[in-house]
Length: 150
Image (tube, rainbow, N blue to C red):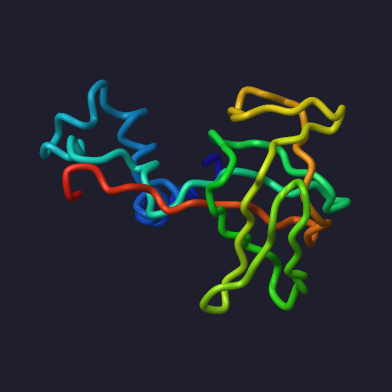
């Protein structure tokens, strides 16, 4: 700035990159969504095809609930590349493979302190026991149901 090195075209191109899209308008304009009618009234940007339900702990024995999780529902296991997932059936649940994808079905939701629940929600900070240890940094997900065909 003091050496007259201001490059407005460089800064303008930086502001138009993907990482800044939407944020810049919020700082420059009071209501950026009114400009060119850019607000999406059909869906939220946070909507996707899948919902993350749980994040596996580093030891692989538990998961932290990230969305409503209940018994007898199949949750897809997304594990790090080349991670081995062992199919198993026991009193807590089962892990199985179908079409080269692994799934978890919980027969009961058993917390780390051995409390049993029918359903657990994301606000619950207690860890949920898995039927068998899973690879660290894996997560559980379900497919989101489409609303109004959108």
